[in-house]
Amino acid sequence: MPSERRPSALTNPRSDRVRAVTALGRRSMRSATGRILIEGPQGVRELIRYAGPTVVDVYVTAAAADRYADVVGDALSAGCYVHEATEPVLAAMADAQAPQGMLAVAQWAPPTLESVLAAGPRLLVLMTQVRDPGNAGTVIRGADAAGADAVLVSDNSVDITSPKVVRSTAGSLFHLPVVTGLDTSATLAALSAHGIRTLATEGGAARTLHDVDLTTPHAWVMGNEAWGLPPELAAACDARVAIPIYGRAESLNLAMAATICLYTSATAQRAGG
Image (cartoon, rainbow, N blue to C red; front, side):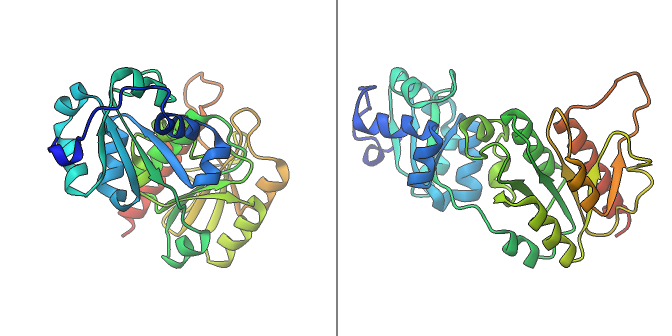
């Protein structure tokens, strides 16, 4: 790293700077500062490439700076502040046990539902009462891979800025809009008002995802990992749809189900022009 960005290594795990970064593991501190923690070279790489202006600081060990020289180079080219830190300092800052010698702090300003709807989306996924960080992050990653226009998250779901969720998105959090803090009933009404059909995933539904028209704008509505969608929310959607299971599995993991639905939709929409 150039000397002007590398004044001296951070060596004190108990310093005020380290404590401030560590505190971002708490939701209250993230809410108060508007900042989030991104751990590991993959997440930091995607943050810099797709949300560079939001980066506050990058922290990296000397070994990781050599191993991930491309990420450090991208950070410096983007004008980010890159700080060398010792392994104990990185360990004290990180929520994860092994951030691979690199993490970053960034400002977090999620988009609004209004801005997403104004862009004329054709494929969305709405998570409601999803509590598991790994599931939430994997749904975001699957939506990104399927080319969805945005991910919508209810106010009674897991905090998307949690380091565990951010890690599990593997950088996808910075690739597509993720709207948080939504009231589910109001969101269903807003989607309907914009001509977006809402499809509730329900294991016992009479129709499967192969029986519905997926070429028009729609949103998949995914419920809690254990009990699915509440009956009143499923009834408020335009259709209830099941994923056909051809083998002996009783059900599918939430993130797997969401990915299957999103890819089926993406395929239908691309085939339909």
